[in-house]
Each structure stands twice: as C-alpha cells, then as structure tokens.
Length: 175
Image (cartoon, rainbow, N blue to C red; front, side, top):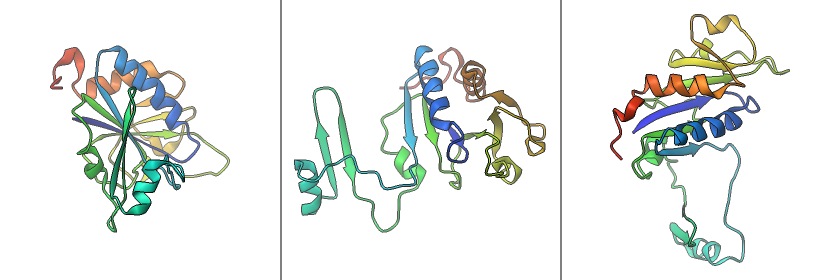
C-alpha cells in the first residue's frame, strides 16, 4: 500500500485538509484508508455497553458490528504499536492517509501542514528532511526549495500525491 503522512502542529488544519483529499482520491476511484494519531485518550466504548463490559472483564479485542459498519477495539499492550503495526491491520487499499506520527520511521510520502500561529513554532521541515512538500497559508525560510501548496486548494495537493506515489491511471491498483 502507498502511504502519505501528513504531519504538523495541533491546529494547523491537517484534519480538514485530509478530509478534502480523501474525497478527491475516492472520486478518482481509489480505495482509501486512514490512520489518525490522537494525543489524548479516545474511547469510543461507553461504560455499561456490552463491548465495554467485555473489555473490562479482560477481553483484549472486541468487535462491535452493525449492519452499516464494524469496529474492533484492541487494548494496547505494554509496547505501544508502531504505525507499521497499525497499518498491517488494514484491508488492502490503494493509499493510506496518515495523520500525525511525526516521529515514526515509516516509508511514506511526508507532507507538512504548517500555519504561522501565535505559538511561533519552527516548521518541522527545518529538522525533518523526509518532508517532501509543505502545505501552508504563508511563507517561511525553513521551506527552502520544497514544493509549496496552498492549504485552501486540495486539488493540486491531491495531484501531487497521486503523481509522487505512482497512482495515476490505476498503475499500481492491486486491491
């Protein structure tokens, strides 16, 4: 599977941009999966529900199924899973969109989403040479010679991803 990894600071607009890009990739007929790294505790299970009760009783994995979708809840072992570990659980897809995982060593096309916020952070590309392009609403000397894309125009970013990952005309479609 081809992987594109969007990295950036909280509040930079990664999720909004990814939502648009997923729609554009799906319109092209590509099968898209997504992995999101959350920095806070997320629990889609609710106390009192059967799946919650199963986990509390000691089940390490629980699948919840409806006619519309299913989800698998897996307790994280002592050694938290890597991005590669998580991707191995996905069904085959043409492309996996990853949000976050800034420090992971994963073979992926890495794009930085960067906005000049009041926090004055240095762009990640200043120290991460794996960044292939920057998606932004401004300029910064750290961008150097990297391709720059307007954060408000997802189509050219999508074309860049498709071209860089060799997904044009279904060349690598193996789903």
